Amino acid sequence: MPAQADAIVLFGGTGDLARRMLLPSLYFLDVDRFLPDGFKIVATARADMTREAFLDEAHKILQGRPEGLDEAVWARFSARLEYVTADATTAEGCAALKPALQGAKQPFFYLAISPSLYEKVCVALAACGLATDDTRIVLEKPIGRDLETSRQINKGLSAVFDENQIFRIDHYLGKETVQNLIALRFANTLFEPLWNNLTIDHVQITVAETEGVGDRWPYYDEYGALRDMLQNHMLQLLCLVAMEPPADMEPDSVRNEKVKVLRSLRRFTRAEVVDRSVRGQYTPGVVGGKEVKGYEAERGQKSGTETFVALRADIDNWRWAGVPFFLRTGKRLPERRTLISIQFKPVPHSIFGQASSHDLMANRLVIDLQPDEDISLTLMNKAPGLSQGGMRLQSLPLSLSLLANFEGAGGRRRIAYERLLLDVIQGDPTLFVRRDEIEEAWRWVDGVADAWSEANLAPKPYAAGSWGPPGAFALIERFGRAWSD
Ligand code: BG6
Image (cartoon, rainbow, N blue to C red; front, side, top):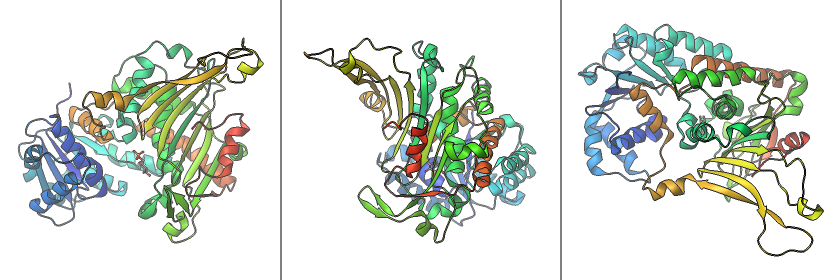
């Protein structure tokens, strides 16, 4: 059993991620008594700030959340908090953390900072003696912008840490429904025999956001939807849908299976890219009843970056040969919705007359991740009542509304980072992304990006509040399917 961590050092402790996700997640872990006794939280950044000022900030952040703040928990939580002003890229800066870590035997380090600083901080941690053979280090995306740059980052890290010490976050893996996908597939006998190209027609994965890029454009303009969402979150979802059953839930068993899927993804060629992918960029429009700017107005100049991508992926292995995976993600779409839809094949022969056959729809398993967490299986059944000229059929969902069931048990919806932080504390890397996974994902995504540039495929405009450029509909229709809603 790996040793339980007894402290976290949060680099980028005053940043956006720390404020929105990490501090609240740590607080909620404390609410549920998951933080070990004496666990310390040391936030650090260059900003000159006293501990009191940091505590005030943290209090405000937590109080401002919809869940509200429990002052009794706050008393316990705030006693754990320290703030250290330091330049973590130097050994002296890292050494300044030591007094706050006094007594901690197993601190771990969370780099919520620019990836361009990862290597320097790791070297500084080693130089001041804070990085040992058991030290865990947690990294945020983006790990590189392509295979080459991700390798450079990974190489820099591996000079100081072994792979089993490195925890690369993909926060989608911390989402309840994403883990539930593993349970659904491997804790039931029902689906696995059907989970292949004999029964499944195609798979769709949609991650739709209503938010625009806003003032994140300096980062986003360099990455675009392909690198920001598809390379990581969406390929992780695809891997969990497509992987073979691992022998157990040991970290490497699951990750080995995911890597095999990534290796089986068919490379894009220049000839195919136009038929199999669409890039889009939002122009002004209306989202949620409000007029919003186009991407270029936010960016302040013309840009060739896509804020929408749709593509057909193929997994060249025995299980999935011939089953298209349609992936689609975009900003400024009409609704926030993340779903995985498994479309089964139609019945091979209809015993119902002409009129009834018209109603016959193939089964579909829809896994909704957000905003609602729901798993539903549409089944055909007889419409109640009498009818003339054959049986009337209807399709109805068999629905497992996770939130409703969970709320009944007094639960609340967790932040994905809670699960992941708890796993780091316990030293369980199963839900973190291994180096070879990241690199295989980049290899495939580089192929898409290269094919786009060879084919000069510029993003097509779409009005904010629409479902992307018309080409996204044409893409899926070209292969005889339609997007699920
Ligand atoms: C991040 C991307 O990784 O995921 C953002 O950088 C995106 O652009 C976000 O908005 C989406 O996460 P979620 O959990 O809100 O779906």
